[in-house]
Length: 596
Image 1: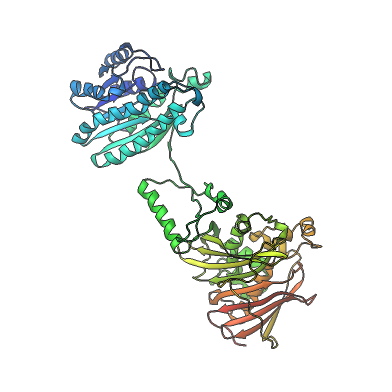
Image 2: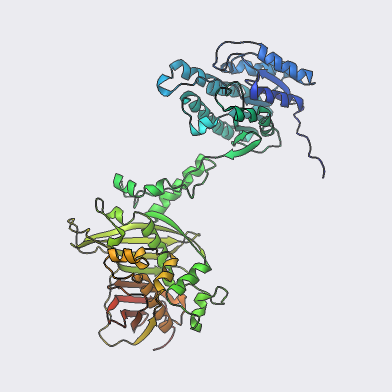
């Protein structure tokens, strides 16, 4: 294996501020040993910013020269940045590298920080770094080359008790570096930030002794040296380094939540903000924006989504073949029926999802967010008081067998039924290409939430129920459910304990856990597909149902169907009791598959 080419700085001039000790000294020694001509700047004062002495800078200059390097001293305060840079020009005729390292501490709690404490710290750290950079800028620009380091701190990034002045200045340096990196890019002037944790005279009384001993400044110097080399392509980076370790630090922005339902919405209530606050502060899908332009464009995309109706509480839904197969098993598909194999075997040449599977994105959004409760501020919405009243699904695009859907849920209508409230929600799901895939509309009945003075009738846009024809059914199919049907179906995501926990079921008023209404719904859609669409999911367009009574796992479902062109009306009942469980229901098909 060949040895890597040594990184050299021959012909380059480096100005290091605060180079009389600690990190600055290590930087100066390393650059000097690698061929750079070094300006060792140090006022020579205490780390509180008091006093001055030429000795600190002179000692480091002597060290560099003793090792065969080239160096000169500068004793100016960094606030006089032009004088610091002029030393480089007077002695070497140019400047290529500027490491803003000078710093002081005047730690006090906020209440005890004086104007002098604040001003001195900001002068050295923030103003001083700006003054030296501004002075070096014309030379960098003329030679079309420059490398600048700003020194921030974990105190600036995270804050630290007793360092209001210091942390404010250190985070200010990040903002300064970001802008300098942008302005210098076209002239090959790069600016990066180092966030070091090193043992120094500034941290000797702050850090535990063991940690202090391991935070050797010479372990950070190579990181800074590389950032200043012409081969380094990073610009605008924040690099943290300590004890022989380094990483990049970035600010990130969460996905957030849209707080308005349309561009016409001018008023947002604090109550609605509260209802979506979990999304506002959710950082699970946080991303880094590389520029203010990128941040602005993402906001523009959000406004475009609002304009196009992609608004409301947002959720993502990932699924694959395993999820489709598990769902199909949950609604009774079986390998005993050869026609069901396409729903159960991912390598089947016609493998496809049951369309009723796509009720899941909207359901899970409603279950895991405050979407429903946000419609009834001040009312107690307990899980035991929620009943699924009606459901509508419309498939808009080709059904995928895997992918990630983004669902936007919003309250569409609220009705006062006296004994309870009905909340109608619309949940639209989009695929990864941004195309609308499925529309879900749910009507949720909340027991005991009525009598709030609301209207009783639905607004236009709530999908209506249509009674089945009065004639005898054109066909009927029966399916025997398993006693484990609810336990199996819940694995698709509907984890309501009403369907598995006897104690919870008793609290809700049932003698035993009941089958999910959406499980009976899935059975019913399967029956229509099997009878009138040759089990071809691509022929499915929409379905609407009303849930009227519960089913117990192990009971037999009977689906009566009436065909009228591409619409199939159906009613689902329990054979053992004769009770209807789904009424007013119909499936719209894109075309008929088999004949009566």
